[in-house]
Image 1: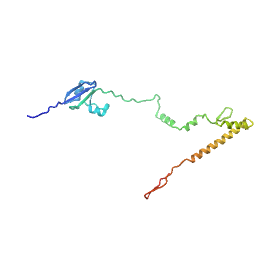
Image 2: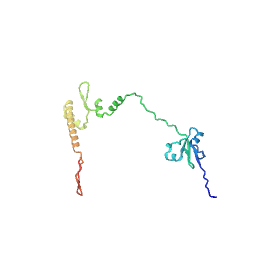
Image 3: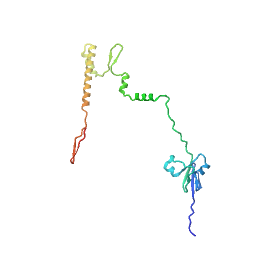
Length: 195
């Protein structure tokens, strides 16, 4: 006589509530699912690796001995619905709308009047907003004979300040730093990079 090992060839199936039952192998997944309609069998290894994305076993697959399977109900997948706007637009209308939204701010500033700057009034006069220090305004008012002469001096001062600001802006632009690279010689190899 000899020694023999008698191993049980069973598999475990666990329900969602924690209840387990054992089945003798060989058994197919379809036989287990016959008693539990609406549920699917998941392999524990697949659940460990893929989580909720684990694929259920097909009905013709055999359950392996000494393995754990889960008997669960899969949530119903809802197809993503197509979102449509309430406005019915043709493709041409949408393209024109897209082109209009991509216009630069400078194009749109032409269409709307500015709050600052020149504005014609009904009587033909021009309204101009500017900033001057109070001390200069008081000095101009005292030196001038009447309001017209004071206004004329203020305008000359404003025009002079405007031209100085334009000149200083051009000077600032020309004095920006420029980066340039000089040729470097290392070990007989010359590298020259253009700026």
